[in-house]
Each structure stands twice: as C-alpha cells, then as structure tokens.
Amino acid sequence: MSDEPVWRTTSGAVSRRLFIAGTGSILAAAAVGGRAAAASPVIADAARVPALVIGSGYGGSVAALRLAEAGIDVHLVEMGMAWDTPGADGKIFANTTSPDQRSFWLRTRTKQPLSNFLGFPIDKDIPRYTGILDAEEFSGITVYQGRGVGGGSLVNGGMAVTPKRENFGSILPTVNADEMYSTYYPRANAGLGVGLVDPGWFDTAECYQYARVGRKHAQRSGFPFVFVPDVYDWRYMEQEQANTVPRSALAGEILYGNNYGKKSLQKTYLPRIAATGRVTISPLHRVTSVTPASGGGYTVMLEQLTTSGTVSATKSVTADKVFFAAGSVGTSKLLVKLKATGALPNLNGEVGKGWGDNGNVMCGRANHIWDPTGSLQSSIPCGGIDNWAAGGAFAEVAPLPTGIETWASFYLSITKNPNRAQFTWNPATQSVDLNWQTAWKQPSIDMAKSIFDKINAKEGTIYRTDLFGTYKIWGDHLTYHPLGGAVLGKATDNYGRLAGYQGLYAIDGSLIPGNTSVNPFVTITALAERNIEKIIATDF
Ligand code: FAE
Image (cartoon, rainbow, N blue to C red; front, side, top):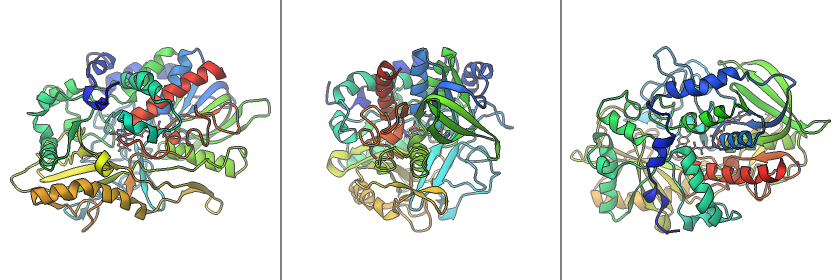
C-alpha cells in the first residue's frame, strides 16, 4: 500500500457504473426504489421479525443490505420521511437560498449553519414539518444531522474521504488497518460510488473559481492543496456547468437535499436493498424503547409520526436482533436512556462516553476586490488544505453559494481536537444531555488558525466577521460530524456487539471515538462493512 493519500488516486470509474443509468434525477432513482417500497408495507404492530435496524444512514444501510443478501429478512425503521415525492415546485428537495418546510426537522424557524450575512440574521419562519435537516441543540453545541431514508447522505456534501493510513491507528486503534485498507475501505468506496473531479476541467470551470482561489492562497502560503473525492456524479456536474441538464450542485442544493447529481444512499445502497426483496422500510417510525422480550429477542417500541411530528400510532414489535444505526447522537441517546431507565440495565458504563465533534470549526476570509470567488459556485466542495501533520487541521475549501459575488473564501476545518463529551440521562427533563462546552472548540480554532493566520498575513487579508453573528469570526457553535457515544471495544466488543446483551449491536458513527481526521462517512461505511461481515458469519 502506498503512502499516497487515497483521495489522490481514487478513480471516478466506479461511480459511473453504480449510478442509476441514463439520468441524474433523484425522481428516477426514487421510482426504482419506490416500486419496491410501495410493494412492501411498513412494519405492523405486534410483528415478530428476525432483524430490526434502527436508522437508515450509512451504518443502517450497510447492515440492511448485507443481512438481506445473507437471506435474513430485515425491517429498517427510520424516523424521517422517505423523500421520494416532489413538493409543489416539482422538486423533492428545497435549495439553500430559499429554505421552506422541507428544510428543517420540526422547527418553526430555520437554524442555518451560517446564521448571518453582512451582519444581518438570515433565518426565517417556516411551517413545522418533518423536514430533512435536524439542528439538534445541546447546551454547548448544535449538531446537524440528516433525517429521512438515507440519513446524513441526504444532506451532506458527499465528500468521501479515506483517511491517510498513517492516521488510522489513532482513529480506530483496535481495528486491523491492513484489513480495512485492503478490503473494507475499497468495498465502501465502491458501494458509495466515490469519484474524483477531473483536475483539467476543474482548472477552467466557472463554478470552481472559489476553490481555485482557495488553492492559490493555500499554495502561496506553502500549504498542500489536495483534491477530495466525492459521491457527486462528476460527469453530471460538467453537464450542469455546460447548462445541458437541470442544475443541482450549481443551483445551491446542499444541506436540504440534492435533486439530481449527488449519489446519496438513495442512489447506491438503497436501490440494492430494495432489489433483495427482503427489506421492509418504515419511514416516519421512531424507536423509543428496546427491552428484552420474555420469550427471547427484544421488544421494540415504535412511534409512527405524522409530517407535523405528532404521534399517530404506537407499535410494539419483537425482534430477534436489533441494530442501533440511529447515528452517533441517536444511538447514544437511545442507549443512555435505556440503561438509565432500567430497560437495558446491563449495558456497560461506557455507553454515552467518548463523543467528539470531529474537530469541526468554520471560518470565512475576506478577499481583495481583485480576487473574486465567483457568483456561480458549486455547492459540492472538491478540495482541501492539508495541514494535519504540522498543525492538526484539514480544511475543506467550502462554497458560499449565495448567487452573488461575495469576495469571501469559506472553510470547514476538521481538527485534532482532543476534547470528548458524555451523554447522560436527565431524570428531571426525561431527556439526554450532552456536556460539551463551547470553550472546548478553542483547540480547533487554534489549529485552524495555523492555516488561516498565515494565509491572511501572506495575502494581506482579514477574517470575515459577519457570517456567524456580528463581529464573530469562528463558527464554533456546531458540528456536522458527530462521532462516538458507543465506542468500539468499550461500549461494544471489537465488532459492535453491545456489552451486556446478546443480539444487540451498534453499527454507525457512534462506534468511532470522536475523530476521523477527515470527513467521516467513508470510515463509518467501511467499519459497518467489516463488522456486519463478522456478525453474519458468527451470530446467525
Ligand atoms: P446517520 O447518517 O445520521 O443516520 C442515522 C439515521 O437514524 C437518521 O436517518 C435518523 O433520522 C435515524 N434515527 C435517529 N434516531 C432514530 C430513532 N430513534 N428511530 C428511528 N430512526 C432514527 O448516521 N460526512 C462526510 O463524510 N462528508 C461530507 O461531505 C459530509 N458533509 C456533511 C454535511 C452536513 C450538513 C451534515 C449534517 C453532515 C455531513 N457529513 C459529512 C456527516 C455524515 O453525513 C455523517 O457522519 C453520517 O451521515 C453518519 O452516518 P450514520 O450511519 O452514523
């Protein structure tokens, strides 16, 4: 295995093979998956099922696919919507410039990651609806997550990064790196349809002027700029730029879903799941409890939700095996509650611990008037500044797809922040707290400054102070990358089997102890592929 970062050598060929042939439209993909979905009813009250998977993001989709391929009937339960039906505008998903009820999970006002522009607040009132992006607020941090069949893949930027091999030991210290890099990362990259922008096209594409400015500034300060793979269909992106297809990334679609070119799980794992004929998907079903059943297996309590978030029915089903794939926050909250309230008292004391934010911190820089970043910006980032080894930061050169020239360079940094938080049950509020403190982002800010102070000094530029409030430089109040809470080898064994109970598993971002050094979903997918292979071989 070469020491070359994997993102430089990833081929785009895989992505084209796996992509739904002939169209980039999510409507077409939904129609393929939708036929199977329509044929399979949602889970019935009092059902007895062999395997129940909670959550349909990366971990849940891998688990469902591989179990079904092994001949096991699976019920995949998802609290968000199916996202297969167009709204009044003919599109399934809203865009960032005009958020509406589809955009946020049960909020009456948007809570956009960039809350201000030129110092003015940009959030607006929306109808309360089971929308796609959850801005879940804990005391010191807002955690953004996807809601719907496809989980975070619906809302994310699709940056599909395999960590450098030399960093893997600190990401998942108990996992055999040789196996991951020879088998499970390649499997995950193939399954997700990961591809790389054509560097020659990048050099001339109007929509990546912002990224070329980012590259120029990085290189002039001596930092390596690296292309970052993505699950976006790059051929479709080129057609968007040429204006020969409906625009998606070039129409500001990100955060609230993407109608055409992004290969979310709706275009990769989920159609393969549907094709097995063994998986029932129940959208708008929220798991509230899992407890041992008297006759063996587990009683799982579900709430069926309306699109306004009210409970229309409760169901009790029995599952022989239960896979927690509700995401780092969702899985942690369930496990902490179930242990504390006596539903699963034998879970060990590691449950809820080891949670981190992947060191996320955002900032913007104000460029000179002769350095415009472009009014047309692709919402899909394709490059980053790698200062991980020297300064502990890997910074995505991110878009600001406002439709107007802003002269702003915008960045999401992933940093080596050492702080870890814990989820605990709060009996007074009957809910789960997270003890993260905003001040714990300071190491992330310092690491990001290792890049941007230097660039500002070299370019004679300053930080933007108008994007996260008034006179506030750092977006230090949020994360897109929650990780941990049911850490591999601590709350579980080395394959995600939860301590204390046979037949209960964690199989999502909750297994990863807080940091992946790069964007996390390829690692979440690869780890799930590794774990489910072992579980199917030994536990069924
Ligand atoms: P996840 O994908 O969150 O799926 C969990 C699912 O469980 C969700 O669909 C939930 O609705 C559902 N759920 C939760 N609780 C329950 C319950 N009680 N009952 C039923 N269902 C439930 O988990 N990562 C990258 O690698 N590259 C990127 O470019 C990137 N960009 C991002 C941009 C944004 C705005 C956001 C929010 C995230 C981004 N991420 C990115 C992070 C990535 O999407 C995230 O790490 C994965 O989605 C986590 O995968 P999991 O399978 O752990």
